[in-house]
Image 1 (cartoon, rainbow, N blue to C red):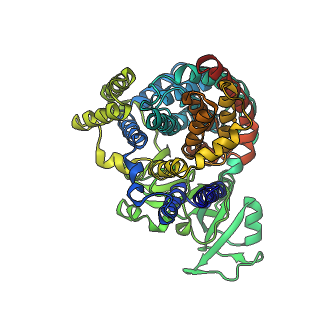
Image 2 (cartoon, rainbow, N blue to C red; image 1 turned 90 degrees about the horizontal axis):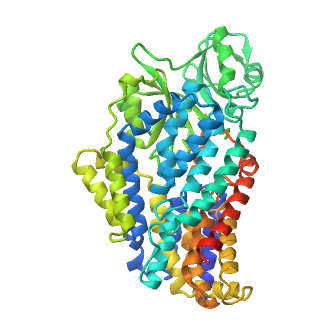
Image 3 (cartoon, rainbow, N blue to C red; image 1 turned 120 degrees about the vertical axis):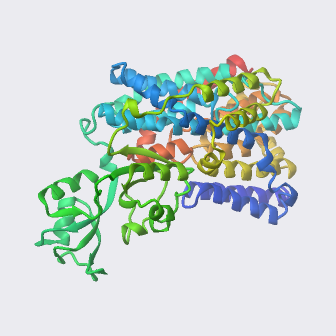
Amino acid sequence: MTFDQGLLLALLGGMLAVFVLDRWRIETVALAGLGLACVSGLVPASAAFAGFAHPAVITVIAVLLIVEALHGSQIIIRFGQWLSGLGLRPAGLLACLCITGAVLSTVMNNIGAMALLLPLVFSLSQTGGYDSRAMLMPLAFATLLGGVCTLIGTPANLIVSNTLKAAMGQGLPFLSLFPAGAVIAAAGLAVLLFWCPRIFPLVPAGAAGDGPEDDLFDVRELAVTQGGETVEGLAARLQGRIISVIRQEAHVFPLRPQTELLPGDLVFAEARGRLFTPLIAEGRLAPAVKPEPGEALTRLAVMPHSSLAGSRIAAIADLEELDLRPAAVTTHGRRHEGRLADLQLLTGDVLTLCGAAGAARQLAEDHGLIVVEAASATTPESVPQASPVPLVLFVAGLVVAATGYVTPEAALGGTVLVLALLGHLDLRVALKSLNWPIILLLAAMLPLGDAMETTGTAAMLAEALAVHLVPGQLLPAAVAMLVIALVMTPLVNNAATAAILAPVALQTAASLGLPPAPLLAAVAFGASLDFLTPVGHHNNTLAYGLGGYRFADFLKAGWPVTLAACAGAIAGLALFWT
């Protein structure tokens, strides 16, 4: 092992460890790793920003821009109205939702498919009274399963294809992954639709025992209207925690359990949302922020790509500009100190704002948020006319890419251009709403993946792996790469997994005298089969935050899906790649 190889392995190992800790944003870690690689000479300075011009990055950007156009076309709203009108039983409703998510993921980035369908989940939850927890995790899993079928379904597929193109002069054909991917998706969806409803029954919220509120906590500001209650007594009645008390514009300090609350005090409390209602109904407490005439309460979910993720509420200048006032924040139970304005928003948090509904929707559009619930539901008559043009142009772009005469990035980039020229895509708004974390992660990890080859690290690891494999036997080698990717991806993002393992698969194929495409396909499949943790993929993280799941819920619901999808991947590799 040379010094550069040891240094690169140490750098990648450190990055993987930091990814697992999940204390810093993934794009920050990736960019920091790229910076260290450039300083140490592992990546030439001239190649530091080469990832931004990589076909995989350009394709992902184009797909996400098209998703923005589809979202604005109101097609999903119309589809939701049609689906609600079918009168399906819960099992049929869940099957339609998951199959739709899987199909959409075959023709667009699975992160975009999840974002496109989230409003549909919230709509079904409100109109049908269903527990959203029974839909969010299955939908996240379904989008991951559908993403394995085509080149543009997930960034991992694009990465391995471009690795093959750099080595052999030609990448994977657009639909080459589809036969094996369809086997994986079918096996995974069958087990998913059988198993998940037994873990999270699709029934009216609250009817299944522990609903999503049991793991979601509201941080609220409340005004004390009746005295006689102590801090300890109020905390016991809320089954939560009193964070602080403001009296005459000053903090009550020290705040003791026996401290008596007086009328006019402002209390900052953290508890399950449903437990605030009885105390407010009794008249002991009142919301500190209440809608004025013409205003409404709107709940907005923080997406992984939101520009507000990581921001303190007090630092969001647009709130004052749009005359919006924070009323509450729903979190996943993390500890918070200080006032509501001091709370830092994270992916999956739900921010409740008081103000004009139109202003709240503008904030959501400008900062990549999703409207979870508004005070007045949108009626069919108020929904803008759905335009088929974005969908037609998207399908046309996919057909052109599938012919192989035009690369996917050129075909989809042309679709974006036509959408913008026809007025169906506002690039200023769409670029602001893009999932920049995944784009920056891709752009930073690709040069590090190239360094695996240029330093000889991939060849060294491939030789170590080849010792345990038989030359000329393709299926065992492909299964080995599949399992390595499958073990690695729950801990890090699937794009990072593919960027690191693709050069290793390429060199392993060379060492064993095998064609590289099947081993690279195995890496792509394994990198996308992440159903065991909420940290390995953006969609899982988003479902975890919005659904109020426990970490163990992913293990409980995901292990049968993982086994089924892995078996499907081995069968698909055996049938179509060996």
